[in-house]
Length: 85
Image (cartoon, rainbow, N blue to C red; front, side, top):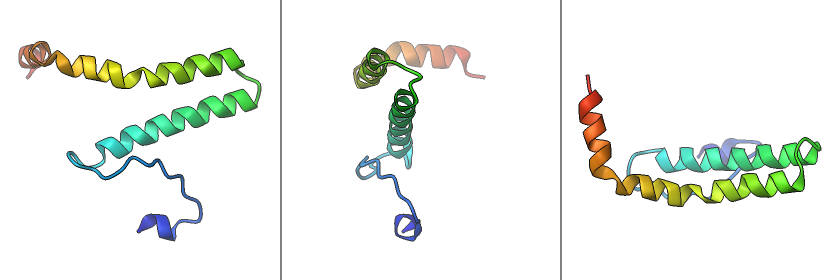
């Protein structure tokens, strides 16, 4: 695999892909890079401890926000049909 061939590897621990290939892996990579960026900013003194806590807590709210969005399936389908083509 690519991970065995690479010199450096950053495992996201996203688990196996069940549905659309790479969707979960992509989302996990975005979250991991977001966390890295926040930690780099904190390490360089560009953000405070409070900002760090806020940014990570906001990231942790994403699953609930995504779930709420997906629960609004009918309205999303209506908009998709309205604006298709």
